[in-house]
Image (spheres, rainbow, N blue to C red):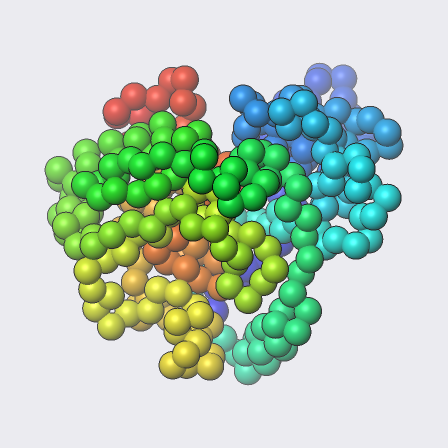
Length: 301
């Protein structure tokens, strides 16, 4: 079974020459808030330490780290009412597969049972503000229909450039890569915007903002793609090896990651058709991304 951890990987920081190893390490709060500021420079201000916590402005409104909860000033006193946001470590490469041990399987059963009985209660205020989508109506106003790999999909207007560059690389790769061309030809549809929660949680899905897409093939070929669907046939869905999961070519995954998207195939609760725009997670995990100001049609290779 692959290793999945919530490792607190630091953001690369250029230290001044006079800084010594004895000086305090950068806190997780500072790492996260600086990553968010860097990931969304057109929507946020610089990270600042104010009122005893790290904070950033989103379209002029201050949000505080609040032990990982990302709360507006008005809710800081109620931080205990919310669970932290999951700023997890995202693996640069797909972790090697090893069959789960009896202990690992038991731990997974207990974890999923706890998740069903006590779904995390996370504040939506930060991401609602970031995507300017506080309700379904506002979210719908922010999405546009685009063509991606020959299919139509509704996505948030702010990620259209990134998706266009992902598409450009994939189409270029398909000219010389038979597996990528076959994958493109096998696509049936793409799901984008959909106002809903993440399955088995009380947290809003990134599909609700139009910041995630699911690439659906004409046939799964008898392979698994989504843990919830797999669980209907196999209660130990986490034990399904990679060879029995439907994976897009890794060149496709790398193209998405280079432009700020995570692939759900690297999650413990796998969703191999799913890509969502989370550049802050990639920054925190030290996964390289392309520079939109420098990129051209060849620079992703």
